Image (cartoon, rainbow over all chains, first blue to last red; front, top):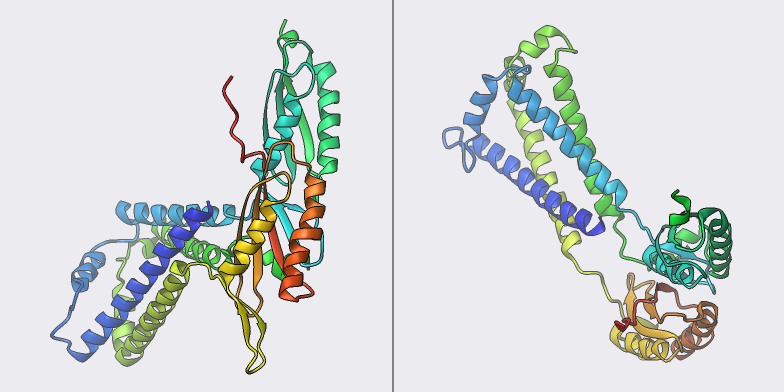
Length: 178
Length: 200
């Protein structure tokens, strides 16, 4: 998302600069030499075309809807491009530490897979929540879930995280399917 | 407050301005689109919706004061052009690697280049047990430089011990050799990614 926002803002800055330059250039040229206009863009033709269009024309509505939608998407992309790194406690003054959410998930995953009766696990993590989905052929959800929740919480307790994420564990076991 | 310290800002390249620009232009687009839809569906009056997009009323009003309208258009165009260009250069500029100036008194200037300090700290950090790979660079503006250290830890590395060793050995040595009380440092950890697992 951050790369996308960087790319988009670069393109937007370019577009803003181009639009502003053309606006200033065309207006100044038309002011200086009314007979010589237009200079680069056929804007009198655009004006004529727009003068023949009514606000309730379908093409105007469609363009407006597309503009609004594009704006909304842009806002959402910009809002989603926040820092996702998980903050850890500062070990000393002027030292800040973060960990990628993927690293946290990887550490939890390795820990869960090393537990008894767990045949596999997928983990997703962010600063607020760690979700574990474990598979087990030998133990059902009833027995395994409290144990895994407990042990993952202990593991996370050993990592000096600024805020302790909630742990949610789901166990996928054939013993529960009857 | 802790979010605004030099070290916290050094954690990653700041994107606040880029995000604000994208958000602002998105907001403008949304507002303009919704306004045009409102007009187009006749919620501002049925006759309003039936009028042309380039309204003769507005055109007449503008041509009644040609100097003002043109001046405003030229000024707005120049401002947009300058602002857009400034922002474009800002987006395209790579993140700076400031040198660290230790002594600025005349005749005794002493500067450590960004590359020198980066490779020294990197060698130190990689010697810590459990650290597979390290990447170090100087970031920030020249007045308040900071170090950004990215560490890839090996699988099963003891985080707390590495933590202590980093501060006690690596950063302490860097501070000592630079004769600084504090050296703003941002550390980014990656766990268990350095080692590839062998297929059995």
